[in-house]
Image (cartoon, rainbow, N blue to C red):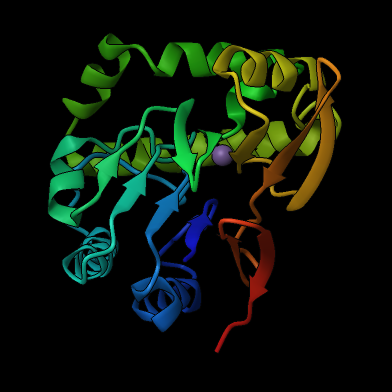
Length: 242
Ligand code: MN
């Protein structure tokens, strides 16, 4: 019995070896025998809408649909790169969309699932942008643009994000401990799994004096990263490029 978690793959046509690693991972015995596979956001470097006719979304949909067809439930939560991904693509890809902050009872242990960006409350500039781009009005306005214009817009947004990341202190871009405690307290859990920060680790913490753990998924820039959760254990490990 095992459940798998991945996040922050940042799939991009410019890095085809990572897309292949993702496809191989979903087709592996480990994924095909899993109780479920969770993708906790930033699956792609940029998502411009479910109507994108590029090759990458088609490959993603084929890979997740095949896993779902094999009887493995696939769950997807958007991140800050793919928050425009919606129900239309979810249906095509055979996965279920999860709200950020969903609690799932993993083998009897309620576990809070997040992308992780909302926990980075010290990054005030980022949180302000996030608030703006998550409004239905902003999203409707973007999605009304022609695909080519959206591609150009996404490229600009990535450049802006890179500039912000490059000029912001590392500690500011990590999660805020109080935000973590508050989220876990509100959800009533002692385990949190999230991505976003690209700092893979299993942190033993305390929330209101109770032992708890915060598990951070790794990114897929240099290699893959996967969390395997069983009824008794968690294992976070890298996936080598083949
Ligand atoms: Mn992210």
